[in-house]
Length: 447
Image (cartoon, rainbow, N blue to C red; front, side, top):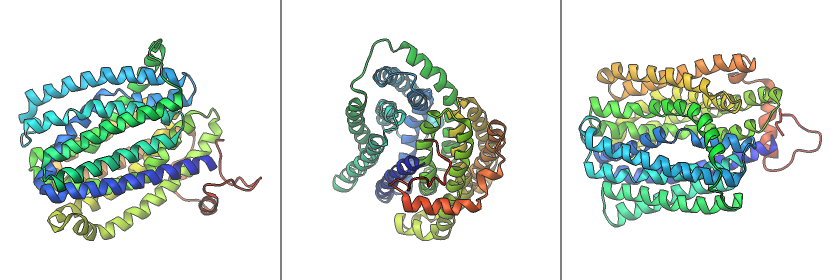
């Protein structure tokens, strides 16, 4: 538990730094481009990230799972991921050009073709970065994993400031800054990961790549459904309303998704840690403690954000973005629900059963799309926010039911705090970053 707390805290710290850099970047883009330009930019970067999500076939979690369970050597995994990233990039770029040439008027009617073509260059940079970064995650080296993420956010901020403030560029500048940040970050993470693995092997990668694809495809469909649940509302808002509405909603999403910092940091550390452990009893005791802590922290943060959302939007983005406030408030319950579900989903995936998460994500996606189709025409972007919250809540309910069958833990143990939790939290704060006194283990431990 000590090591878990330390790694989670370091990862959370890096997430906070990324939040600060990303928030400043978002403010610069929103203030200089305005609501409509911000909406167009959001739609431009949506295309490559949808394609990346479709194209990567779950190699990132598969890499972490196979390395954590010590099934293949790091050099072999690094070489295999480079080969896979090259193949996925070619397929993704080809698919992107086809979408722009044949379906732009249908899916992106208000976005210039030139902007979309430029955004497609993000596909290979993003795939390569994620595939290489996953190696450090699987090796549980959170130093390089977190450093690369912080550097990419910092570079994006720097390049955005140069392009939009100093050179007075528009959407071209924002897209170019994004691309340069990913390219440089990809080079750096490749060099750092090479140090961890002692080089790479581009031969005899077949067994690893087959295993990675076998596990990854099971995870991939679930990740795809989850991603679409996160972003399908942007496409439907643009379809029913206009780019300005997308801009307002995108700002709301940017703010509320920062509440996922804790669950994201914890999940990143939890997944390889659980995958490396063969003790089922310890897993069953460990995960509920983490889920309850994530629930309480996210709930507290959501209550604060609800109260200050109006003021926060005005200060950060100006009063022209005040239409984003109501969607922010409506999204908060869903954000809390999905934070807890992330912990559950990582536990299930670490047990080698990712298909369960895929089925859950499919149900959530269907609920999200149906409700968006009904509520956006009636209630605008507030309807989209409410649809997402209902979708995320259904995800948690289904996840709790399935997790109970797998682990035997009732749903209450995942959400309702226990008396001993407060002493655990206090002890965690006191002993964070250093060893507990001998014989004083008051947590379930995987070590």
